[in-house]
Image (cartoon, rainbow, N blue to C red):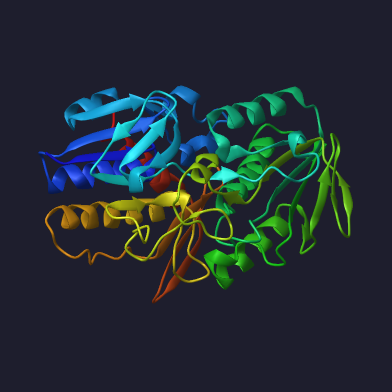
Length: 375
């Protein structure tokens, strides 16, 4: 019986589990993660307003793992030996015949004063901090921003920052206290949201202007303080900084012989294979992949990569040549608590539909549909 180890319990990892189990009911699958739970971070944008409570989007995977006949190994990966066949963890070594790495990315925290900022996609706890800070504030200055990894331009998360920005603007208006706050948005990029396409960029910047959100674009970030953001051209007040840094690879990658990109991610091909390592794959934010410059780091893309990785691993087990290449597609709804902008981009087209209430409810429906399979 073949043994497969999957590192992580997020979008890519769970899609890999489903794809492997559909393709082969007999293989032994072990999932390695600190806890048998999934944080559905796309809905963390609704925690500050109270539309979602933390327990609504923190999903126990115990029942899912039982249904899928999965062994969960509660641990953190620490290294890899034996050409990928032995995973080292802080709770013992695990042998495998195939490995799929879905352990996510790590945010770069090198900017001076970064401890003064809250990074939303670090987990549900970050959204709770934002919620609590907003409750404490009677007014003031809130700055939202994001940056990339200069050595890995695709390793960034801009979409959630637009959602927190527009969502908190809506929340404050709903609470009747928007006039007590100054909201600003900053990024080193001259045109925020370029991965979404030119039409989306126009729509986002236009929405900021309509909502009286001041922008600071195209200047390199220098530092944060308790009450300000400083770039190479501006210094502006910020009593609360909500910031998404660029991403790099996990610390434990350095304890392996796996090839790393210049930006610190695992180098993979279009089939999600880590070249030079048999039966070893990566999916989601952990990897650096070939593709267009707009290829996103998002849950949908992670799912597509995980499907390809699992299909190709099963092909290798059957002594076949892996041929499955992941589809490059960006798909998201930029939500603002009551409406949403739909953006779809692939190799053939770029569709941007303006904000409608329907898209907000579609995002909420998708949350229910996606999570029901794990509950």
